[in-house]
Image (cartoon, rainbow, N blue to C red; front, side, top):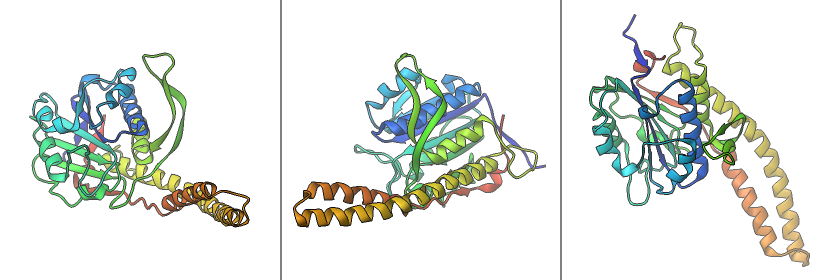
Length: 291
């Protein structure tokens, strides 16, 4: 059997997020909570964001080690004592990679920063943000080797409404995480991680199994939503026509037409979102096991 690489208590977990939206910080809270439930120490988790106020959202959930995204190179170069790294990239993405407010992180600088972590033998990069494909087709087998999972290629990623059966409590009694618009690929990955499933039946719960599970589940959600959106777009099209007639007859005002038009455009945008999960360096991903 080929050498097995293991994610365990000596692994470093990173969350990278370019966003000012609370939903993306909720994705981090959910992920950190899943890691904590698996026994990952808080010192083994580091968060990189580009919204200075984002830390205020994370602090009530006991999340520390929060840095600015622009600090990633210097911070990771100082991280010692870890055998491997798993980096989860979320929030917004573009052709520039991730990052805003004057700082962009394309594929090469991210890879260089992760490979600069002293002593790691391999790494995993999971890309759930929009246009994750800009990080594809890079050198993954240079040392230390890296395996990549992407939620989508050169398309927007999908976030959908999630409601947790057991809300995640915070240090403030009045605050908890129960409902939010979750990145569905990242959500599915941590769902798999909470109870790893051997999808391909080879006797190991590997990163490839996580990829297959997350890709399948996120596309199930997408198919369900598209069915709902198709009907909604039909209804909104009829409403828009009726509203335009109402304006012509003097029964309605233009702002009412504009409101329906915006709803229709949002539904059509989502209706044409395409999730196409991908994996880079599958040979490594087949040998990475979790606990």
